[in-house]
Length: 82
Image: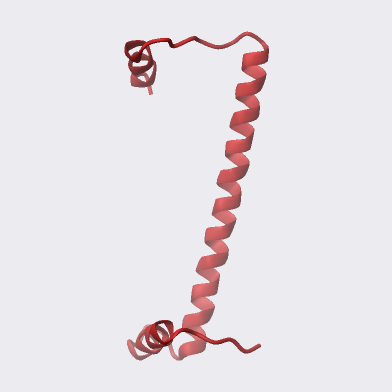
């Protein structure tokens, strides 16, 4: 697999490899890809939790379990509980 980096990214990779934290540029790139993969997995998990929360909210509303907050004071009081 071949890829091209911008000059700034290439210099960053070289600097990280020279820092002694990594043995070579390949290790730097592998670590970057591992971090990207972890970030994507965390994003997907947060999205799944958000979808479940929205579904739970929709079900609560359909069942009549909701509050009407029709003023700033009521909204402030509601969110102050959290």
